[in-house]
Length: 274
Image (cartoon, rainbow, N blue to C red):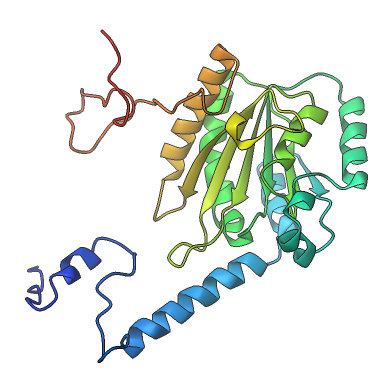
């Protein structure tokens, strides 16, 4: 099928086919066309809806039960969505009741674990609803191959990234990864973020975490995200650190390369010495 001809008056249209970004919108006089304005309003409404969508933790727990995976529901110190949005600090720590619940669980199940998986709604419960279970399925296949011990999946309502460090510390975990809904964009209301910390404890800053973002069907695939995360986890265990001192140099196959040729490391970094 032949491609439609490019409008010589608007060569940007060819690029528009390659990206969801708002380019080549056109104009009517000095204003945007009505269709572009309506598309913008729709995207803005979808982003707002994603932020305020309630966390369906019951649905996720049901799906985890069907996969024979235990889960534990906790809540942050933010009592409702308004306080969560206005007080980011409350979302970074557990409520007193949830912290006590986790301490009791840790006492009843003595013995440190290698990895804690935390799932929090963040700023897009939609992302968590859509991508958590498919991603966990890919991730846990590789975790089992590594032989790491894993705690029940910890679900946190009104949670932010740093709450994972408190959970990891209370459970005495070597590593923690939190799956969280990222701030919606006008073309991506359902982007899932992964934040990984080695030796988690309260008070760590973002410099001690590694982030893998834009996990969704139109972004980073579940398989590639799991591949990158497992690389970081292996290297963290070997080097006993995470964050800015741990770079993502995972080897990946490219579609353009021959089947036997691998991309050596991250193309932004210097190639490894022979």
